[in-house]
Length: 148
Image 1 (cartoon, rainbow, N blue to C red):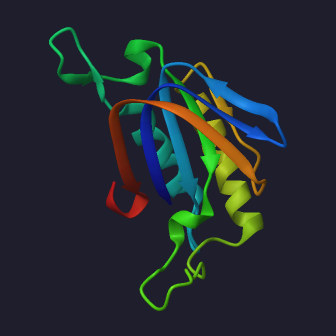
Image 2 (cartoon, rainbow, N blue to C red):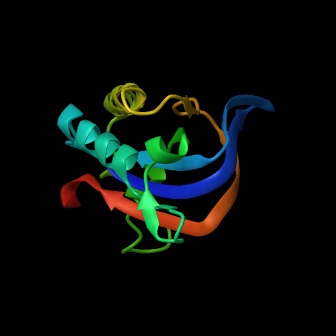
């Protein structure tokens, strides 16, 4: 799995003008499932995200987790994280997971995050979504389940 995580002051996702998920302080998490990803990879990624200590403490050091600050999660599916742009000018998505399996893993990851975080909002898998956010920092991380 691949993730782009942004620390936010607030974020929201909408489909056809209707808000499907919104959070205050926390993380906006863009999630892509790749071909061959498993529930174990989704669990590992969810656990890592929820335990990351990237909020500032009283000394300004990035030392606090979502739980420490009462943070929230907004999780949005993003298969384009698996874009391969090495050849030509049109991205290839052959390494992205099959839609049915990717959706299952996306929903599994949302449920796993709910074990750690009080509020987990999300988009609609496969929908054309509009995402808005106020980035905090900015603080952005890229994670790959192969590297955690």
